[in-house]
Image (cartoon, one colour):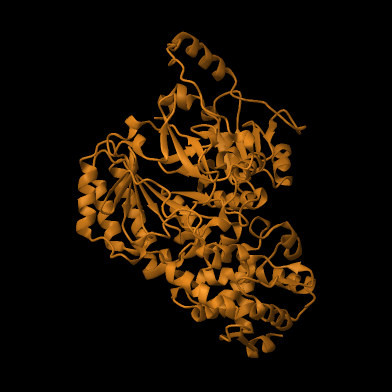
Length: 625
Protein backbone atom coordinates (compact mmCIF):
# COMPACT_ATOMS: atom_id res chain seq x y z
CA UNK A 1 0.00 0.00 0.00
CA UNK A 2 2.80 2.42 0.86
CA UNK A 3 4.44 1.80 -2.55
CA UNK A 4 1.18 2.67 -4.29
CA UNK A 5 0.77 5.81 -2.21
CA UNK A 6 4.25 7.00 -3.10
CA UNK A 7 3.73 6.53 -6.85
CA UNK A 8 0.16 7.74 -7.38
CA UNK A 9 -0.42 11.28 -8.61
CA UNK A 10 -3.89 12.65 -9.38
CA UNK A 11 -4.12 14.91 -12.43
CA UNK A 12 -7.25 16.96 -11.88
CA UNK A 13 -9.19 19.07 -14.39
CA UNK A 14 -12.17 21.11 -13.17
CA UNK A 15 -15.17 20.62 -15.43
CA UNK A 16 -16.14 24.24 -16.13
CA UNK A 17 -12.97 26.26 -15.71
CA UNK A 18 -10.71 23.62 -17.33
CA UNK A 19 -8.12 24.65 -14.77
CA UNK A 20 -5.78 21.79 -13.88
CA UNK A 21 -3.94 20.68 -10.76
CA UNK A 22 -1.75 17.75 -9.80
CA UNK A 23 -1.44 16.33 -6.31
CA UNK A 24 0.26 13.22 -4.98
CA UNK A 25 -1.77 10.64 -3.10
CA UNK A 26 0.91 10.66 -0.41
CA UNK A 27 0.22 14.39 0.16
CA UNK A 28 -3.50 13.81 0.55
CA UNK A 29 -3.04 10.88 2.93
CA UNK A 30 -0.55 12.81 5.04
CA UNK A 31 -2.82 15.88 5.12
CA UNK A 32 -5.97 14.03 6.18
CA UNK A 33 -4.10 11.84 8.67
CA UNK A 34 -2.57 14.90 10.29
CA UNK A 35 -5.96 16.65 10.31
CA UNK A 36 -7.66 13.71 12.02
CA UNK A 37 -4.84 13.41 14.56
CA UNK A 38 -5.18 17.01 15.71
CA UNK A 39 -8.78 18.00 14.92
CA UNK A 40 -10.74 14.75 14.72
CA UNK A 41 -12.91 15.33 17.78
CA UNK A 42 -16.68 15.61 18.07
CA UNK A 43 -16.57 19.29 19.01
CA UNK A 44 -15.31 20.38 15.57
CA UNK A 45 -16.55 17.58 13.31
CA UNK A 46 -19.80 16.52 14.95
CA UNK A 47 -20.80 13.40 16.86
CA UNK A 48 -21.84 11.37 13.81
CA UNK A 49 -18.45 11.64 12.12
CA UNK A 50 -16.60 11.26 15.41
CA UNK A 51 -18.42 7.98 16.05
CA UNK A 52 -16.91 6.75 12.77
CA UNK A 53 -13.28 7.74 13.32
CA UNK A 54 -13.25 7.41 17.12
CA UNK A 55 -10.21 8.01 19.29
CA UNK A 56 -6.59 7.18 18.58
CA UNK A 57 -3.83 8.50 16.37
CA UNK A 58 -4.38 9.91 12.88
CA UNK A 59 -3.56 6.65 11.08
CA UNK A 60 -6.01 4.67 13.18
CA UNK A 61 -8.79 7.20 12.59
CA UNK A 62 -8.09 7.29 8.85
CA UNK A 63 -8.27 3.49 8.60
CA UNK A 64 -11.67 3.54 10.31
CA UNK A 65 -12.86 6.24 7.92
CA UNK A 66 -11.71 4.23 4.88
CA UNK A 67 -13.46 1.10 6.10
CA UNK A 68 -16.78 2.84 6.83
CA UNK A 69 -16.61 4.69 3.49
CA UNK A 70 -16.26 1.35 1.66
CA UNK A 71 -12.57 1.72 0.84
CA UNK A 72 -10.88 -0.58 3.35
CA UNK A 73 -7.10 -0.38 2.78
CA UNK A 74 -7.79 1.61 -0.40
CA UNK A 75 -6.79 5.23 0.13
CA UNK A 76 -6.22 5.53 -3.62
CA UNK A 77 -9.85 4.74 -4.42
CA UNK A 78 -11.14 6.92 -1.59
CA UNK A 79 -9.31 10.03 -2.80
CA UNK A 80 -10.13 9.23 -6.43
CA UNK A 81 -13.82 9.54 -5.55
CA UNK A 82 -13.31 12.72 -3.54
CA UNK A 83 -11.21 14.46 -6.22
CA UNK A 84 -13.72 13.48 -8.91
CA UNK A 85 -16.52 15.08 -6.90
CA UNK A 86 -14.44 18.22 -6.41
CA UNK A 87 -13.85 18.58 -10.16
CA UNK A 88 -17.64 18.85 -10.62
CA UNK A 89 -18.26 21.04 -7.59
CA UNK A 90 -19.04 24.68 -8.41
CA UNK A 91 -19.63 27.69 -6.22
CA UNK A 92 -23.36 27.78 -7.00
CA UNK A 93 -23.84 23.99 -7.07
CA UNK A 94 -21.44 22.34 -4.63
CA UNK A 95 -21.37 18.55 -4.96
CA UNK A 96 -22.25 16.91 -1.61
CA UNK A 97 -19.12 15.34 -0.15
CA UNK A 98 -20.70 12.00 0.75
CA UNK A 99 -18.89 8.68 0.32
CA UNK A 100 -20.90 5.52 0.99
CA UNK A 101 -23.33 7.53 3.15
CA UNK A 102 -20.46 9.06 5.13
CA UNK A 103 -20.85 12.85 5.13
CA UNK A 104 -17.37 14.35 5.14
CA UNK A 105 -17.15 17.48 7.33
CA UNK A 106 -16.31 20.71 5.52
CA UNK A 107 -13.16 21.23 7.57
CA UNK A 108 -11.80 17.86 6.47
CA UNK A 109 -12.64 18.52 2.80
CA UNK A 110 -10.95 21.92 3.07
CA UNK A 111 -7.76 20.18 4.20
CA UNK A 112 -7.92 18.26 0.89
CA UNK A 113 -8.71 21.36 -1.17
CA UNK A 114 -5.71 23.16 0.31
CA UNK A 115 -3.54 20.55 -1.42
CA UNK A 116 -5.41 20.78 -4.73
CA UNK A 117 -5.87 24.58 -4.84
CA UNK A 118 -2.92 25.83 -2.77
CA UNK A 119 -2.06 29.44 -2.02
CA UNK A 120 -3.19 32.37 0.10
CA UNK A 121 -3.41 35.42 -2.15
CA UNK A 122 -6.49 37.45 -3.01
CA UNK A 123 -7.62 38.18 -6.56
CA UNK A 124 -9.74 40.89 -8.20
CA UNK A 125 -12.05 39.36 -10.80
CA UNK A 126 -12.61 42.05 -13.43
CA UNK A 127 -14.68 40.14 -15.97
CA UNK A 128 -17.08 37.22 -16.19
CA UNK A 129 -14.58 34.86 -17.79
CA UNK A 130 -12.07 35.41 -15.01
CA UNK A 131 -14.74 34.82 -12.38
CA UNK A 132 -15.81 31.59 -14.11
CA UNK A 133 -12.28 30.23 -13.87
CA UNK A 134 -11.91 31.16 -10.22
CA UNK A 135 -15.26 29.69 -9.16
CA UNK A 136 -15.40 26.73 -11.61
CA UNK A 137 -18.61 28.24 -12.98
CA UNK A 138 -20.31 28.36 -16.36
CA UNK A 139 -22.39 31.53 -16.69
CA UNK A 140 -25.25 31.24 -19.24
CA UNK A 141 -24.76 33.37 -22.35
CA UNK A 142 -27.94 35.37 -21.75
CA UNK A 143 -26.69 36.47 -18.30
CA UNK A 144 -23.11 37.40 -19.11
CA UNK A 145 -23.64 41.04 -20.09
CA UNK A 146 -25.77 41.80 -17.04
CA UNK A 147 -23.32 40.06 -14.72
CA UNK A 148 -20.47 42.06 -16.24
CA UNK A 149 -22.42 45.22 -15.48
CA UNK A 150 -22.74 44.05 -11.86
CA UNK A 151 -18.99 43.46 -11.67
CA UNK A 152 -18.27 46.87 -13.19
CA UNK A 153 -20.57 48.53 -10.65
CA UNK A 154 -19.60 46.54 -7.57
CA UNK A 155 -16.05 45.14 -7.71
CA UNK A 156 -15.46 41.44 -7.10
CA UNK A 157 -12.49 40.41 -5.00
CA UNK A 158 -11.96 36.94 -3.54
CA UNK A 159 -9.24 35.18 -1.58
CA UNK A 160 -8.12 31.65 -2.41
CA UNK A 161 -9.23 30.75 1.11
CA UNK A 162 -12.75 31.95 0.29
CA UNK A 163 -12.73 30.32 -3.15
CA UNK A 164 -11.94 26.95 -1.59
CA UNK A 165 -14.82 27.39 0.86
CA UNK A 166 -17.15 28.40 -1.99
CA UNK A 167 -16.53 25.08 -3.77
CA UNK A 168 -18.22 23.18 -0.93
CA UNK A 169 -20.68 25.67 0.60
CA UNK A 170 -23.45 27.73 -0.97
CA UNK A 171 -23.54 29.76 2.22
CA UNK A 172 -20.09 31.14 1.44
CA UNK A 173 -20.88 31.77 -2.23
CA UNK A 174 -24.03 33.64 -1.21
CA UNK A 175 -21.94 36.26 0.57
CA UNK A 176 -19.22 36.96 -2.00
CA UNK A 177 -20.29 35.94 -5.52
CA UNK A 178 -21.78 38.60 -7.84
CA UNK A 179 -25.45 38.11 -8.77
CA UNK A 180 -27.86 39.72 -11.24
CA UNK A 181 -30.22 41.08 -8.56
CA UNK A 182 -27.53 43.54 -7.54
CA UNK A 183 -28.75 45.72 -10.42
CA UNK A 184 -32.11 46.12 -8.65
CA UNK A 185 -32.57 49.78 -7.68
CA UNK A 186 -34.88 49.04 -4.74
CA UNK A 187 -33.24 50.27 -1.57
CA UNK A 188 -30.93 53.09 -0.60
CA UNK A 189 -27.44 54.21 -1.51
CA UNK A 190 -26.65 55.20 2.05
CA UNK A 191 -28.32 53.98 5.23
CA UNK A 192 -27.11 56.56 7.73
CA UNK A 193 -27.32 60.33 7.92
CA UNK A 194 -23.63 60.94 8.49
CA UNK A 195 -23.88 63.20 11.52
CA UNK A 196 -20.24 64.22 11.28
CA UNK A 197 -17.71 63.46 8.54
CA UNK A 198 -14.33 65.14 8.26
CA UNK A 199 -11.52 63.59 6.22
CA UNK A 200 -11.06 59.99 7.33
CA UNK A 201 -13.16 60.57 10.45
CA UNK A 202 -16.86 59.69 10.85
CA UNK A 203 -18.93 60.17 14.00
CA UNK A 204 -22.39 58.87 14.89
CA UNK A 205 -22.11 58.81 18.68
CA UNK A 206 -20.84 61.27 21.28
CA UNK A 207 -18.29 58.90 22.76
CA UNK A 208 -17.21 56.96 19.67
CA UNK A 209 -15.75 57.79 16.25
CA UNK A 210 -14.61 55.87 13.19
CA UNK A 211 -11.26 56.24 11.43
CA UNK A 212 -11.34 55.06 7.78
CA UNK A 213 -7.67 54.11 7.43
CA UNK A 214 -7.83 52.12 4.19
CA UNK A 215 -10.27 52.18 1.30
CA UNK A 216 -10.23 48.56 0.10
CA UNK A 217 -10.69 45.03 1.44
CA UNK A 218 -9.01 41.75 0.45
CA UNK A 219 -12.51 40.32 -0.19
CA UNK A 220 -15.70 42.24 -0.97
CA UNK A 221 -18.95 41.20 0.72
CA UNK A 222 -21.96 41.67 -1.56
CA UNK A 223 -24.16 42.87 1.33
CA UNK A 224 -21.73 45.55 2.54
CA UNK A 225 -23.44 48.80 3.57
CA UNK A 226 -20.50 50.67 2.01
CA UNK A 227 -20.76 48.94 -1.38
CA UNK A 228 -22.07 52.14 -3.02
CA UNK A 229 -19.32 54.35 -1.67
CA UNK A 230 -16.67 55.61 -4.03
CA UNK A 231 -14.11 54.86 -1.32
CA UNK A 232 -13.07 51.62 -3.03
CA UNK A 233 -11.70 53.73 -5.86
CA UNK A 234 -10.35 56.55 -3.72
CA UNK A 235 -6.76 57.15 -2.69
CA UNK A 236 -5.95 55.94 0.80
CA UNK A 237 -5.49 58.56 3.52
CA UNK A 238 -1.93 59.60 4.32
CA UNK A 239 -0.21 59.55 7.69
CA UNK A 240 -0.68 63.33 7.74
CA UNK A 241 -4.45 62.72 7.45
CA UNK A 242 -4.26 60.26 10.33
CA UNK A 243 -2.38 62.74 12.52
CA UNK A 244 -4.97 65.41 11.74
CA UNK A 245 -7.75 63.07 12.86
CA UNK A 246 -5.83 62.21 16.04
CA UNK A 247 -5.51 65.92 16.78
CA UNK A 248 -9.29 66.29 16.42
CA UNK A 249 -9.75 63.48 18.96
CA UNK A 250 -7.27 65.12 21.32
CA UNK A 251 -9.51 68.20 21.29
CA UNK A 252 -12.72 66.17 21.82
CA UNK A 253 -12.72 64.95 25.45
CA UNK A 254 -16.12 63.27 25.12
CA UNK A 255 -14.68 60.71 22.67
CA UNK A 256 -13.65 57.54 24.54
CA UNK A 257 -13.56 54.88 21.80
CA UNK A 258 -12.07 54.81 18.31
CA UNK A 259 -12.98 52.21 15.68
CA UNK A 260 -10.11 51.80 13.20
CA UNK A 261 -11.73 50.47 10.06
CA UNK A 262 -11.99 50.91 6.29
CA UNK A 263 -11.98 48.91 4.05
CA UNK A 264 -9.66 46.73 6.01
CA UNK A 265 -7.20 48.78 8.09
CA UNK A 266 -4.82 45.81 8.35
CA UNK A 267 -3.98 46.31 4.66
CA UNK A 268 -2.34 49.64 5.56
CA UNK A 269 0.42 49.09 8.13
CA UNK A 270 1.66 52.68 8.17
CA UNK A 271 -1.75 54.23 8.81
CA UNK A 272 -2.68 51.60 11.39
CA UNK A 273 0.51 52.03 13.40
CA UNK A 274 0.33 55.82 13.10
CA UNK A 275 -3.23 55.80 14.46
CA UNK A 276 -2.49 53.42 17.34
CA UNK A 277 0.66 55.29 18.39
CA UNK A 278 -1.07 58.68 18.16
CA UNK A 279 -4.23 57.68 20.02
CA UNK A 280 -2.17 55.99 22.72
CA UNK A 281 -1.05 59.46 23.81
CA UNK A 282 -4.58 60.93 24.06
CA UNK A 283 -5.48 60.80 27.78
CA UNK A 284 -9.27 60.50 27.49
CA UNK A 285 -9.26 57.70 24.87
CA UNK A 286 -10.05 54.41 26.61
CA UNK A 287 -10.56 51.81 23.87
CA UNK A 288 -9.24 51.14 20.37
CA UNK A 289 -11.25 48.74 18.22
CA UNK A 290 -9.56 47.30 15.13
CA UNK A 291 -12.24 46.21 12.64
CA UNK A 292 -11.49 43.45 10.13
CA UNK A 293 -13.28 40.57 8.47
CA UNK A 294 -10.00 39.02 7.39
CA UNK A 295 -10.07 36.63 10.36
CA UNK A 296 -12.93 34.94 8.51
CA UNK A 297 -12.21 35.39 4.80
CA UNK A 298 -8.46 36.06 4.60
CA UNK A 299 -6.72 34.72 7.73
CA UNK A 300 -3.38 34.60 5.92
CA UNK A 301 -3.18 38.38 6.38
CA UNK A 302 -2.28 37.74 10.04
CA UNK A 303 0.25 34.99 9.27
CA UNK A 304 1.94 36.72 6.33
CA UNK A 305 5.43 38.24 6.62
CA UNK A 306 6.43 36.08 9.58
CA UNK A 307 3.09 36.74 11.31
CA UNK A 308 3.73 40.50 11.28
CA UNK A 309 0.32 41.49 12.61
CA UNK A 310 0.14 38.86 15.33
CA UNK A 311 3.64 39.74 16.49
CA UNK A 312 2.94 43.49 16.31
CA UNK A 313 -0.41 43.56 18.07
CA UNK A 314 0.84 41.79 21.18
CA UNK A 315 3.43 44.44 22.19
CA UNK A 316 1.07 47.24 21.10
CA UNK A 317 -1.53 45.82 23.45
CA UNK A 318 1.02 45.89 26.29
CA UNK A 319 1.85 49.53 25.53
CA UNK A 320 -1.82 50.46 25.50
CA UNK A 321 -2.43 48.52 28.71
CA UNK A 322 0.33 50.50 30.43
CA UNK A 323 -1.42 53.66 29.23
CA UNK A 324 -4.67 52.30 30.78
CA UNK A 325 -6.26 51.65 27.41
CA UNK A 326 -7.94 48.60 25.95
CA UNK A 327 -7.27 47.03 22.53
CA UNK A 328 -10.02 45.01 20.85
CA UNK A 329 -10.45 43.33 17.47
CA UNK A 330 -13.91 43.44 15.87
CA UNK A 331 -14.79 40.92 13.19
CA UNK A 332 -17.77 39.47 11.30
CA UNK A 333 -18.86 35.86 10.99
CA UNK A 334 -22.10 34.96 9.23
CA UNK A 335 -22.38 31.16 8.95
CA UNK A 336 -20.66 28.13 10.55
CA UNK A 337 -19.29 27.09 7.15
CA UNK A 338 -16.95 30.10 7.41
CA UNK A 339 -15.23 28.66 10.45
CA UNK A 340 -11.70 27.52 9.62
CA UNK A 341 -8.89 26.18 11.75
CA UNK A 342 -6.94 29.36 11.03
CA UNK A 343 -9.78 31.62 12.14
CA UNK A 344 -10.21 29.74 15.42
CA UNK A 345 -6.45 29.79 15.97
CA UNK A 346 -6.26 33.54 15.37
CA UNK A 347 -9.06 34.28 17.81
CA UNK A 348 -7.52 32.08 20.49
CA UNK A 349 -4.05 33.58 19.98
CA UNK A 350 -5.33 37.14 20.30
CA UNK A 351 -7.50 36.42 23.34
CA UNK A 352 -4.71 34.46 25.02
CA UNK A 353 -2.56 37.58 24.75
CA UNK A 354 -5.15 39.87 26.31
CA UNK A 355 -6.70 41.23 23.09
CA UNK A 356 -10.48 40.82 23.17
CA UNK A 357 -12.12 39.63 19.93
CA UNK A 358 -15.80 40.37 19.44
CA UNK A 359 -18.06 39.21 16.64
CA UNK A 360 -20.89 41.00 14.86
CA UNK A 361 -23.27 39.12 12.57
CA UNK A 362 -25.50 40.57 9.85
CA UNK A 363 -28.72 38.56 9.55
CA UNK A 364 -29.01 37.37 5.93
CA UNK A 365 -32.20 35.90 4.52
CA UNK A 366 -31.53 32.44 3.11
CA UNK A 367 -28.11 32.11 4.73
CA UNK A 368 -28.01 32.39 8.53
CA UNK A 369 -31.68 32.96 9.30
CA UNK A 370 -32.25 29.75 11.27
CA UNK A 371 -31.57 29.19 14.95
CA UNK A 372 -29.54 25.94 14.75
CA UNK A 373 -26.91 27.32 12.36
CA UNK A 374 -26.37 30.44 14.47
CA UNK A 375 -26.19 28.31 17.62
CA UNK A 376 -23.44 26.23 15.99
CA UNK A 377 -21.59 29.35 14.78
CA UNK A 378 -21.64 31.14 18.12
CA UNK A 379 -20.71 28.01 20.07
CA UNK A 380 -17.57 27.46 17.97
CA UNK A 381 -16.55 31.11 18.19
CA UNK A 382 -17.13 31.25 21.93
CA UNK A 383 -15.07 28.08 22.34
CA UNK A 384 -12.14 29.89 20.72
CA UNK A 385 -12.56 32.81 23.13
CA UNK A 386 -14.58 35.32 21.10
CA UNK A 387 -17.28 37.54 22.56
CA UNK A 388 -20.58 37.72 20.65
CA UNK A 389 -21.69 41.31 20.28
CA UNK A 390 -24.51 42.05 17.83
CA UNK A 391 -26.85 40.41 15.34
CA UNK A 392 -27.96 43.08 12.88
CA UNK A 393 -31.58 42.71 11.77
CA UNK A 394 -32.29 43.19 8.99
CA UNK A 395 -29.31 43.41 6.66
CA UNK A 396 -28.62 46.97 5.45
CA UNK A 397 -31.35 48.07 2.97
CA UNK A 398 -28.84 48.98 0.23
CA UNK A 399 -29.54 48.94 -3.53
CA UNK A 400 -29.14 45.44 -4.89
CA UNK A 401 -29.31 43.77 -1.48
CA UNK A 402 -32.99 42.84 -1.37
CA UNK A 403 -32.23 39.09 -1.59
CA UNK A 404 -30.63 39.41 1.85
CA UNK A 405 -33.51 41.25 3.55
CA UNK A 406 -35.76 39.57 6.08
CA UNK A 407 -38.59 40.94 8.24
CA UNK A 408 -37.82 42.18 11.73
CA UNK A 409 -40.05 39.46 13.20
CA UNK A 410 -37.87 36.69 11.77
CA UNK A 411 -34.76 37.98 13.52
CA UNK A 412 -36.61 38.29 16.82
CA UNK A 413 -37.97 34.76 16.43
CA UNK A 414 -34.44 33.41 15.95
CA UNK A 415 -33.32 35.34 19.03
CA UNK A 416 -35.83 33.34 21.08
CA UNK A 417 -34.31 30.11 19.77
CA UNK A 418 -30.84 31.32 20.75
CA UNK A 419 -32.09 32.16 24.23
CA UNK A 420 -33.19 28.54 24.62
CA UNK A 421 -30.09 26.85 23.18
CA UNK A 422 -27.12 29.13 23.93
CA UNK A 423 -25.45 30.09 27.16
CA UNK A 424 -26.73 33.39 28.49
CA UNK A 425 -23.15 34.72 28.32
CA UNK A 426 -22.90 34.40 24.54
CA UNK A 427 -26.27 35.52 23.26
CA UNK A 428 -25.62 38.55 21.03
CA UNK A 429 -27.71 41.66 21.36
CA UNK A 430 -30.35 41.93 18.63
CA UNK A 431 -30.05 45.37 17.08
CA UNK A 432 -31.03 47.49 14.10
CA UNK A 433 -28.73 50.16 12.71
CA UNK A 434 -31.13 53.07 12.13
CA UNK A 435 -30.00 56.17 10.20
CA UNK A 436 -29.06 57.91 13.46
CA UNK A 437 -27.62 55.00 15.45
CA UNK A 438 -28.21 51.47 16.71
CA UNK A 439 -31.07 50.34 18.92
CA UNK A 440 -31.30 47.11 20.90
CA UNK A 441 -34.72 45.62 20.33
CA UNK A 442 -37.17 46.08 23.19
CA UNK A 443 -34.58 47.56 25.53
CA UNK A 444 -33.38 50.80 23.93
CA UNK A 445 -35.87 50.88 21.07
CA UNK A 446 -38.96 49.39 19.44
CA UNK A 447 -41.15 49.59 16.34
CA UNK A 448 -43.64 52.44 16.66
CA UNK A 449 -45.70 52.27 13.46
CA UNK A 450 -45.60 51.83 9.71
CA UNK A 451 -44.76 54.96 7.74
CA UNK A 452 -47.93 56.54 6.38
CA UNK A 453 -46.37 57.72 3.13
CA UNK A 454 -44.43 54.58 2.13
CA UNK A 455 -45.30 51.06 3.29
CA UNK A 456 -41.68 49.96 2.78
CA UNK A 457 -40.63 52.04 5.80
CA UNK A 458 -41.32 51.84 9.52
CA UNK A 459 -40.70 54.25 12.39
CA UNK A 460 -38.40 53.01 15.15
CA UNK A 461 -38.19 54.56 18.59
CA UNK A 462 -34.55 55.35 19.56
CA UNK A 463 -32.98 56.51 22.84
CA UNK A 464 -31.26 59.48 21.18
CA UNK A 465 -32.32 63.10 21.70
CA UNK A 466 -31.61 66.26 19.66
CA UNK A 467 -29.44 67.46 22.56
CA UNK A 468 -27.33 64.29 22.37
CA UNK A 469 -26.08 65.25 18.90
CA UNK A 470 -25.55 68.97 19.54
CA UNK A 471 -21.92 68.54 20.57
CA UNK A 472 -20.84 67.21 17.17
CA UNK A 473 -23.64 67.35 14.59
CA UNK A 474 -26.32 69.43 12.93
CA UNK A 475 -29.83 69.62 14.35
CA UNK A 476 -31.04 66.06 13.89
CA UNK A 477 -34.73 66.96 14.10
CA UNK A 478 -34.47 68.79 10.75
CA UNK A 479 -33.97 65.62 8.67
CA UNK A 480 -36.90 64.01 6.84
CA UNK A 481 -36.25 60.58 8.32
CA UNK A 482 -36.16 61.76 11.94
CA UNK A 483 -38.90 63.10 14.22
CA UNK A 484 -39.12 64.08 17.87
CA UNK A 485 -41.59 61.98 19.87
CA UNK A 486 -43.68 62.94 22.90
CA UNK A 487 -40.97 61.92 25.36
CA UNK A 488 -38.37 64.06 23.62
CA UNK A 489 -36.32 61.29 22.03
CA UNK A 490 -35.99 60.73 18.29
CA UNK A 491 -37.90 58.27 16.13
CA UNK A 492 -36.02 57.15 13.01
CA UNK A 493 -37.59 56.21 9.68
CA UNK A 494 -36.10 52.93 8.51
CA UNK A 495 -36.59 50.77 5.42
CA UNK A 496 -37.78 47.34 6.62
CA UNK A 497 -40.74 44.99 6.79
CA UNK A 498 -42.05 44.26 10.27
CA UNK A 499 -43.38 40.76 9.52
CA UNK A 500 -45.64 40.66 12.58
CA UNK A 501 -47.99 43.61 13.09
CA UNK A 502 -48.06 42.93 16.84
CA UNK A 503 -44.51 44.29 17.04
CA UNK A 504 -45.81 47.81 16.44
CA UNK A 505 -46.03 49.04 20.04
CA UNK A 506 -46.85 52.66 19.27
CA UNK A 507 -45.71 55.84 20.98
CA UNK A 508 -45.47 56.31 24.71
CA UNK A 509 -46.79 59.32 26.57
CA UNK A 510 -44.33 61.45 28.48
CA UNK A 511 -44.31 60.76 32.20
CA UNK A 512 -42.64 62.30 35.24
CA UNK A 513 -39.02 61.46 35.91
CA UNK A 514 -38.34 59.12 38.80
CA UNK A 515 -37.46 60.93 42.00
CA UNK A 516 -37.04 58.02 44.44
CA UNK A 517 -33.89 58.14 46.57
CA UNK A 518 -31.91 54.96 47.24
CA UNK A 519 -32.59 53.45 50.66
CA UNK A 520 -29.01 52.62 51.67
CA UNK A 521 -30.03 50.74 54.81
CA UNK A 522 -32.34 48.46 52.83
CA UNK A 523 -29.57 47.92 50.27
CA UNK A 524 -27.15 46.97 53.04
CA UNK A 525 -29.67 44.46 54.44
CA UNK A 526 -30.12 42.96 50.97
CA UNK A 527 -26.37 42.53 50.58
CA UNK A 528 -26.14 40.78 53.94
CA UNK A 529 -28.87 38.31 52.98
CA UNK A 530 -27.29 37.66 49.57
CA UNK A 531 -23.90 36.87 51.11
CA UNK A 532 -25.37 34.25 53.47
CA UNK A 533 -25.93 31.81 50.59
CA UNK A 534 -24.82 32.56 47.03
CA UNK A 535 -26.46 29.51 45.47
CA UNK A 536 -29.43 30.19 43.23
CA UNK A 537 -30.53 26.56 43.41
CA UNK A 538 -32.97 26.78 40.51
CA UNK A 539 -33.27 23.40 38.76
CA UNK A 540 -35.48 22.84 35.72
CA UNK A 541 -34.73 19.09 35.52
CA UNK A 542 -34.01 16.31 37.98
CA UNK A 543 -30.43 16.41 39.25
CA UNK A 544 -28.01 13.76 40.49
CA UNK A 545 -27.29 15.44 43.82
CA UNK A 546 -27.81 18.56 45.90
CA UNK A 547 -24.35 19.71 44.81
CA UNK A 548 -25.55 20.38 41.25
CA UNK A 549 -28.48 22.28 39.77
CA UNK A 550 -29.40 22.95 36.16
CA UNK A 551 -31.13 26.19 35.31
CA UNK A 552 -30.69 25.99 31.52
CA UNK A 553 -29.97 23.53 28.73
CA UNK A 554 -26.40 24.81 28.46
CA UNK A 555 -25.58 25.65 32.08
CA UNK A 556 -25.12 23.85 35.38
CA UNK A 557 -24.23 25.24 38.78
CA UNK A 558 -22.07 23.10 41.04
CA UNK A 559 -20.80 23.39 44.57
CA UNK A 560 -17.08 23.63 45.28
CA UNK A 561 -17.40 20.24 47.02
CA UNK A 562 -18.73 18.50 43.87
CA UNK A 563 -17.14 15.19 42.89
CA UNK A 564 -17.26 12.28 40.44
CA UNK A 565 -21.04 12.02 40.26
CA UNK A 566 -21.53 15.67 39.31
CA UNK A 567 -18.66 15.69 36.80
CA UNK A 568 -19.95 12.53 35.13
CA UNK A 569 -23.37 14.18 34.72
CA UNK A 570 -21.66 17.08 32.92
CA UNK A 571 -19.52 14.74 30.80
CA UNK A 572 -22.52 12.76 29.54
CA UNK A 573 -24.40 15.78 28.16
CA UNK A 574 -22.60 17.68 25.40
CA UNK A 575 -25.22 20.45 25.46
CA UNK A 576 -23.61 21.74 28.66
CA UNK A 577 -21.12 24.47 27.77
CA UNK A 578 -20.97 26.47 31.01
CA UNK A 579 -20.20 25.42 34.56
CA UNK A 580 -20.88 27.93 37.34
CA UNK A 581 -19.28 27.44 40.76
CA UNK A 582 -21.94 28.56 43.19
CA UNK A 583 -21.51 27.69 46.86
CA UNK A 584 -23.07 28.81 50.09
CA UNK A 585 -19.87 30.70 50.81
CA UNK A 586 -18.13 33.00 48.36
CA UNK A 587 -16.03 31.38 45.61
CA UNK A 588 -12.97 33.24 46.90
CA UNK A 589 -13.12 31.09 50.03
CA UNK A 590 -13.02 27.80 48.06
CA UNK A 591 -10.34 28.47 45.47
CA UNK A 592 -8.27 25.38 46.31
CA UNK A 593 -11.20 22.99 45.70
CA UNK A 594 -12.38 24.95 42.65
CA UNK A 595 -8.92 24.87 41.06
CA UNK A 596 -8.80 21.07 41.33
CA UNK A 597 -12.27 20.75 39.77
CA UNK A 598 -11.40 23.13 36.92
CA UNK A 599 -8.45 20.92 35.97
CA UNK A 600 -10.82 17.97 35.65
CA UNK A 601 -13.46 19.96 33.78
CA UNK A 602 -10.74 20.96 31.30
CA UNK A 603 -10.87 17.40 29.94
CA UNK A 604 -14.58 17.71 29.11
CA UNK A 605 -14.32 19.14 25.61
CA UNK A 606 -17.85 20.49 25.23
CA UNK A 607 -17.45 22.74 28.28
CA UNK A 608 -15.84 25.99 27.14
CA UNK A 609 -16.52 28.29 30.10
CA UNK A 610 -16.16 28.11 33.86
CA UNK A 611 -17.58 30.89 36.03
CA UNK A 612 -17.09 31.73 39.69
CA UNK A 613 -19.97 33.37 41.52
CA UNK A 614 -18.49 35.93 43.89
CA UNK A 615 -20.72 38.66 45.30
CA UNK A 616 -17.76 39.89 47.31
CA UNK A 617 -16.27 41.19 44.07
CA UNK A 618 -19.01 43.81 44.26
CA UNK A 619 -19.66 44.10 47.99
CA UNK A 620 -16.11 43.63 49.36
CA UNK A 621 -13.69 44.24 46.45
CA UNK A 622 -10.79 44.80 48.84
CA UNK A 623 -10.34 41.03 49.26
CA UNK A 624 -9.23 40.84 45.62
CA UNK A 625 -6.41 43.32 46.14
